[in-house]
Amino acid sequence: MVTLRLDVQYDGTDFHGWQRMPGVSTIQGHLETALATVLRHPVTLDAAGRTDAGVHARGQVCTFSVPEMLDALALRRLLRGVNALVPDGIGVRAVAPVEEGFHARFTALGKRYIYRIHNAAWPDTFGARTHWHLPEMLDVDAMQQAAWCLLGEHDFNAFRAAGCQAKHATRYIWRVDVTRDGDVVEVVLWGNAFVRSQVRITVGTLVEVGQGRRPHSDVRRILETRDRTQAGRTAPPQGLSLDRVFYPQDAAAAAIPPGARWPGWPPG
Image (cartoon, rainbow, N blue to C red):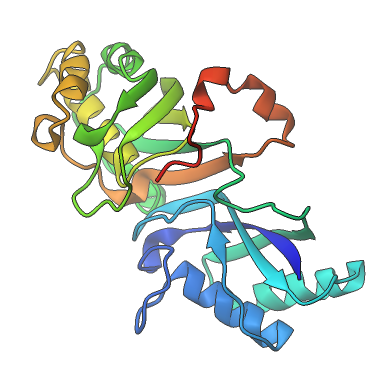
């Protein structure tokens, strides 16, 4: 068997998330159907991360197996065929063979998520599918101060949604940036892994800091409680995008701190 890697991007607005489910439109379901049609055999995709309904991806990575190596022409045909069969909103950017043992999730060293907020009095019609509209002006400096409390390895149980199936919530965040460019506020998180809804709950909490509803130092207290009820609301899905997945062979992987590669990887 040969492992192939798919690099995928999608607008998650019209889909019920990544994971295949009977009777509903999902990213995994559409991709597996298209791949099976082109290859003429069933395909099961493993993804770097399972995004929720309404969440987007620019840098999703998937792996799957085929019985034998495909030449360059066959790979180009596969790429064109899949893109012709999937619905609007899903696009495969590349397909290529990878070394034995490579796995989209378990080989990954980390991920980068971007959350975008349209912070202006009036909504942006063209950004409604990709931004959370908040009319109240946010204090970005206070949000950044709060975000610094998240750096390093912590138990993020206070920032994970009910129903999360991970065995534990210990994760390592090595960078968080909160920036403003005109009316757009971006929250960017780099980490070795994330529990369910961690980024959206983090953003919801930082927004409360930016609105002056809680001090920036409160984030450290929330972490220590490990109590979901102490954190802020879960930000809506449309602002979130899986931007990049990092692998050992990437040049950017050199910037990942050694502490982020804690024993026991991958996490449960």
